[in-house]
Image 1 (cartoon, protein in one colour):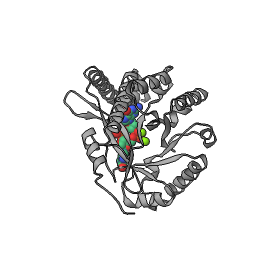
Image 2 (tube, protein in one colour; image 1 turned 90 degrees about the vertical axis):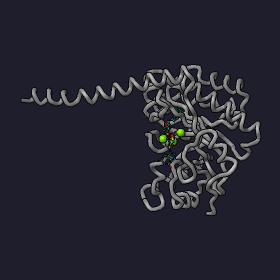
Image 3 (cartoon, rainbow, N blue to C red; image 1 turned 60 degrees about the horizontal axis):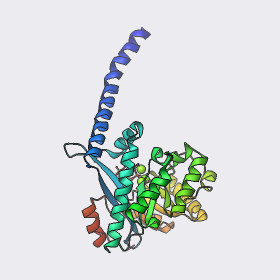
Image 4 (cartoon, rainbow, N blue to C red; image 1 turned 180 degrees about the vertical axis):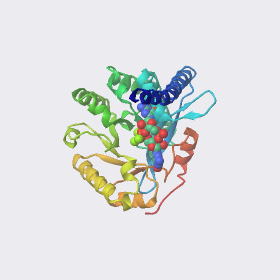
Length: 284
Ligand code: C2E
Ligand code: MG
Ligand code: MG
Ligand code: MG
């Protein structure tokens, strides 16, 4: 009886697994195609200060398939990580972001922009010559390194320990800054974080959501902000969608916001329009 149950289970399970495997295979093919034919895109999400000025942006990869539709980027990144494609893709993102940032600043359209954030996946960060890659891209593009922020996640740090600290220090020597992304969702100890050469802490959207009337989120956010202040880190609140959330975070000392309230990630042209003329200028 147990045997036949087991068989039923397998009969049910296999098609689901097959579907997932097929989708991952399709994604892998799309990623190779996009890489070979230069079809990846970067979108840019504004980061706004309390006066509504665009002080920064995060670049977010967009992965089209041959039908021209974008695939879910978190899934694409996951497949890219397991197949190793993340290394060439990540290098493309880094170079493209730096080239564009340099062009915007040179042309005078990005005067308020203090930085551009670039997501770095764990495998990329842990590759042996990552620091020299960053150095090469800075030299080749001529970008001002102090305007470049590399975003890493807590999992990148947990998987490695000491190596991560020396890589971070070497990156800081190049002049770039380092942000910790999705902060609060990992399991790193706070004492460990105090030993890292970080510049910016991005509070994860899951804590920002309804923070103005959710006591648990409010408590977490207040603790994170207190810690950031102690460590001299800048804070960016991710995923702000309402004015009430923003007002609460502002009152607690956050000065930089990224979220749909201000803007979704935008194509480069739309982002440049937004820079010239932010759609939402708010009186707090
Ligand atoms: P992330 O780095 O935490 O990026 C923020 C994500 O939150 C983006 O999703 C953005 O569209 C979304 N978001 C921003 N504001 C709001 C909001 O107000 N409400 C809601 N519901 N969502 C908001 P996206 O573009 O789908 O990217 C998902 C993740 O994929 C990123 O999370 C990042 O981990 C990864 N990713 C994206 N581009 C790259 C890349 O170039 N390299 C690497 N390694 N990872 C990337
Ligand atoms: Mg990010
Ligand atoms: Mg994030
Ligand atoms: Mg995230």
